[in-house]
Length: 94
Image (cartoon, rainbow, N blue to C red; front, side, top):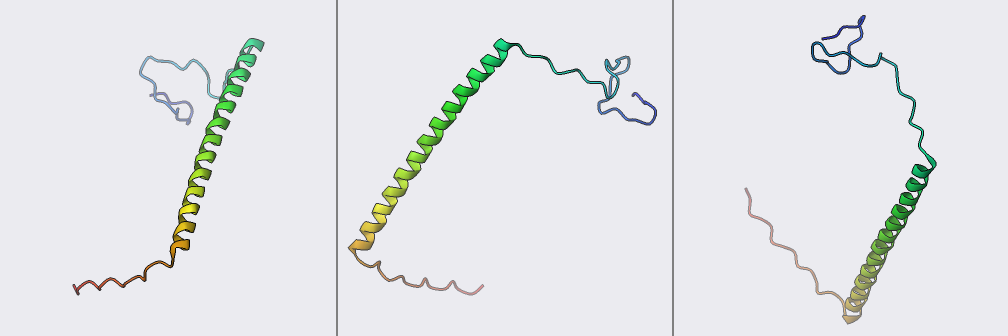
């Protein structure tokens, strides 16, 4: 176990294992090349088109289902009033 002047490490290291960085030391972000940026941009555009296509398909399915249910409801209403509902008999006492 490593004890550093009252600061407990987040991860316990095995005996003989040392930390490679001092607390608070961070690596600067890796600079990406123009080719990597262009590739990421291309993949992002493809993913965005795919997501929009999936969304449009879901919206079309929702709209078609809503229209079908509306047509069924209107047909039921045009056929006549619904039959009167009967009350269910009460359950026997406990």
